[in-house]
Length: 287
Image (tube, rainbow, N blue to C red):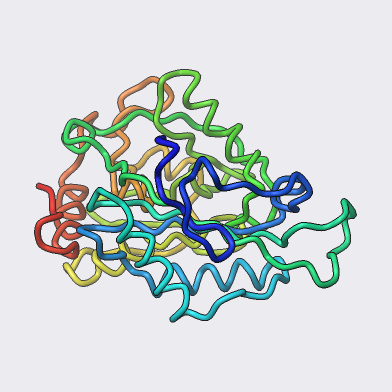
């Protein structure tokens, strides 16, 4: 990442090499903060209002006052987008509880730290879309508030590394025999042409792309159920997908080193992928 890339920190736009925070920032000491990643197509934020609603939900969940209203966030994100040399972007937005003496209790009077940066949007390659990706499975041993998009991500990091260790893209997780999500993605399955996804509860992140996939599937007339999914049902599915802001929707075709389903992206995935692309701005759609 070039040191000259422009980021935003606490009210100022500056080169990333000049952006500094205190070692006493609670985001650094405790992971005491929340974040969002907003995809941007042709310099237009995708589902911005949905991301800002989830940001508020996460801030409420850790009892941290939102330092800006939606209009101010929107203006700030768009100002950062305009300062980047690339059109398709992934805007990273982070708010921590700020700088204070190290003490577990919330500090009084600390100003939140607000940081934003934007990088090129790392979408799946055409080969991944055409052939699918590899994933592994693991027991979900993270904390019980996975619905909050906090910066305390060591559990997800360890799960993602299990996949990286064997050259896979993701780790699909189960808790007590039930499908939750993947380390940095939501998970959907297909059986007999019908899509199913786990309900949004404290065990999974309420994914913006998850919501978009449900909405787009229904608008395209594709049947979809939101309900608990057992490990046995998930592993016996015809198709399994990952969804996230940077993956959009991608098919898993290898699981735990073996072909999954037919071993190629299935017909329902192809319909879902086409539906997703149709909702993106003209010029950013892929086939």
